[in-house]
Length: 161
Length: 83
Image (tube, rainbow over all chains, first blue to last red; front, side, top):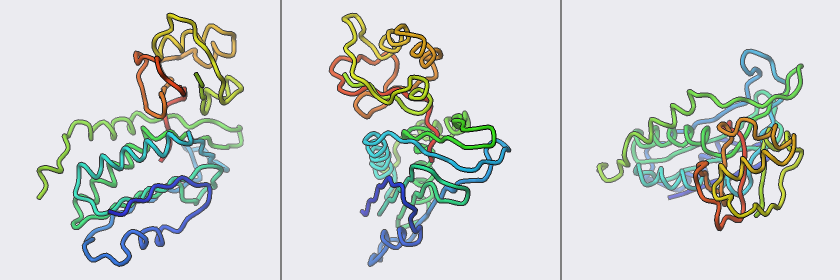
């Protein structure tokens, strides 16, 4: 298993990160990547920038716990999670989740699971800068509901062939 | 114990961290928040809606009824909006 968890201010190359996970391996048959980008609007209002605050130490620990849970639930061969912090502008990459498996089902499910938990459990907070000033982005109930659906289904690793 | 504050909780308090020694009888995260809220107007403002504030003890999410005994670091913050 190839696991990468990084929090960083700097931009990164999504293709290079996927290459790092799959390079030299012939057992991986599926890679799913989710890339989150900074949009130019929040709630229909234009924004100039997005600033991400995080809790150093806990953010890594929390992501690590969810990565471990993903490995326990699905037959994965690799996981990459990279989350940026600091000031970003529209078009910038915020987050990458990439999952590798022999077959696509596990990779799709694990990527979705990890993103849902990142949104609701990883200690990051977004602040947007608009013409009206800086405001904190409010958490969405729909994100909580998305994360909640995973707690309803028990770990499936044992059931997987 | 060390307290950390993030996002608008930090802004309302005007500080990111501090060292506190809660009196005996403050046993849970929720009681700690109530005690902090009584300190002055800034704390009252930061913790005015305690139900929405999340907490972590030593880098793990906890609930308001979690005991604080033995905690090194307790953090308070709004619901998370990463990803």
